[in-house]
Length: 70
Image (tube, rainbow, N blue to C red):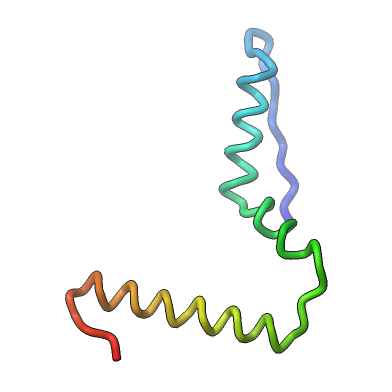
């Protein structure tokens, strides 16, 4: 996990600084990782999920290139 630092400037409101913080967290994928780590995931389930993610990515790239994925 990465540490996020947000500097609050003098003229900046809290809401503006908080929105910058949330944007940085979403870019780093921190919230996604926290949700995944909420419960224990067996290694076999993790491998299955990663494999499905790779297959989806290959299909998406194949469709982008105009080819078919079998």
